[in-house]
Length: 240
Length: 257
Image (cartoon, rainbow over all chains, first blue to last red; front, top):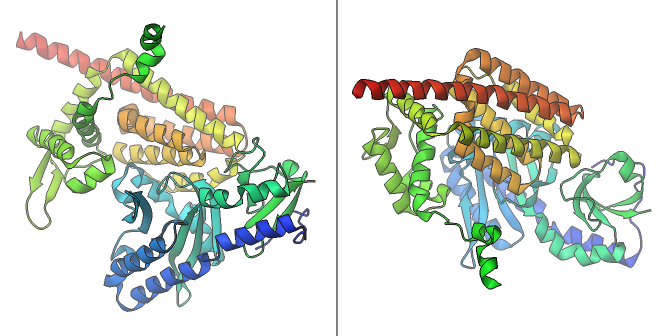
């Protein structure tokens, strides 16, 4: 990842900051490996037995969603004819907690009032960025009103078969799952610390002036020092 | 003391009937509107009963009862067996008559109130997007909008609904999204009925483009103004349709008398 600002410094050595960075890193540690499992199943079925795509994906996604309470949803999204011939564009499952049981539900956006929303799938950040850069991306936090109706991060990677782009595989994690873990650690760093996503989008702010999901303007960013969390799209902003 | 609190207008609102029994008629109304305005076209297949029940978050019995009403009024028919299900009936004149009745049943005051509500939600959405500093996210929304090429009223209403939902989503407010979905279900199909008219369709398209351009360039007031104008011309069209429908009804009544 690249950093836009000039006010980025390397990891601060204070114990509070180190602890915070460690917890954030651990929070998303399972992401790369789990997405890799989902995408390799998708690639394998598409290349060998496309008819099995949905069933095989369902199996691997159920397993992933049941393995931890941190994932709110997972699957693949594609507008490639090879996928649409077999199935829907959104092969995505969301975690539903009912009667204390986790039950992954297929996301049936085709049947909802939101059906038309799909018309613009290719323009949405979590699809567009991996499609253009062919690299993993983290979108958000944004309100995931197609799935969870909560602020979530969506991690997506490109699905490629022999260099051709087929869509994205990804996982949703709620902001809440991170907030619960780091709120007090963030306080230890500063009473007005902010966790930023992609350098300017507010993920968690101790300063009530900034709502989750809002974007800090360059002038506002001037008054903060940013500490990037290595291997993530997140950084910690503390007032100068 | 306790009595006066119990009878205050605020507490009265809390204890207002939830309207469980109205569920059947609300589901029926929503599907009727979709059929009447062509969002669901003749021959379209409805989702299965259990899928509908889970989408509407109601019981299977409620869905069945609503579908039964639609079947009884010949708006849908059911085929058994493989490839079966509920389908929208092919006779579109029936849907047209239905829409006229629906429009005529609303008072002018009800229609303008619904339009006020619709406008207020979108105003709030646009103001929130700019307060959050998220105007640039609308670039992708504009891409999608510009790529669409609706050739009839039903397609244009689908584009309009999609655009309004995307906008609500960009505000990052769950509650605004839910209100948008609700007003769209209650009133969207009717408000945008004027999109059947090619000239009006074109004007609205231009106003939508202006709204998006102004938002992206940071002039929220100009964007809101463009949106309000779009709602106003659609509303005017709807109200004149309503007058026609009522005149029609009066004439029919006189003939029958």
